[in-house]
Length: 218
Ligand code: G3P
Image (cartoon, rainbow, N blue to C red; front, top):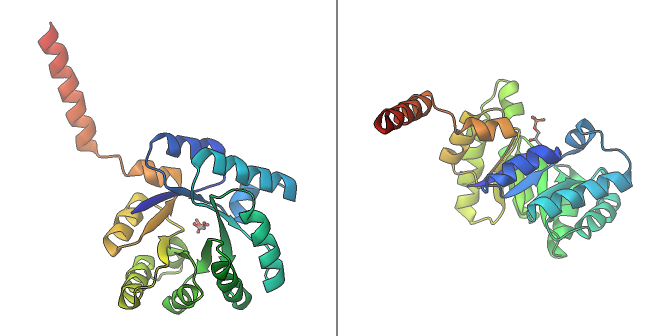
């Protein structure tokens, strides 16, 4: 399973990248705003900075909601760096745009996916990634991981090439459950990635090893 980090924060991206296990980055307009990045020029520069840092799979979202606007924006984003993946919302014009980008060799990530039906449409349109938002589904008292299982199953039935990118991850257990469900990618906050490392028995065991080593040296 690939690991993406879901943030526009450069120091968090750097910290995850330095672990050597990072496969990409996802951003969205809310995450960009959280970092205080405003204005087209600054936003484009920020995407380039992220691409230069990570070198692959950087999702950059279009703001337009009409076909022509999405194509214009997507072409501009894709021209920034070969690592750019154009993020397109799951709406009617988004499907048309995904198909156009697919026919024209521009990589895409279909975002704001909350049902298997939407995931089928994204795959039919040739999206490279489909992003079901599992945390937001859980927040609404449904089961986000169950949706991942359903999409993985359906894509397997037909050999769709679209990769299932579990998004809106809230905790380390989400990552483990998505891995069990066969997600191709998880995009996670840094805390959830680092949370995977934690186990009290590791800490207790290491403390004992180091103490025993010290005793042996006396
Ligand atoms: O990148 C999109 C997605 O991960 C959003 O997550 O936490 O805002 O539901 P969240």
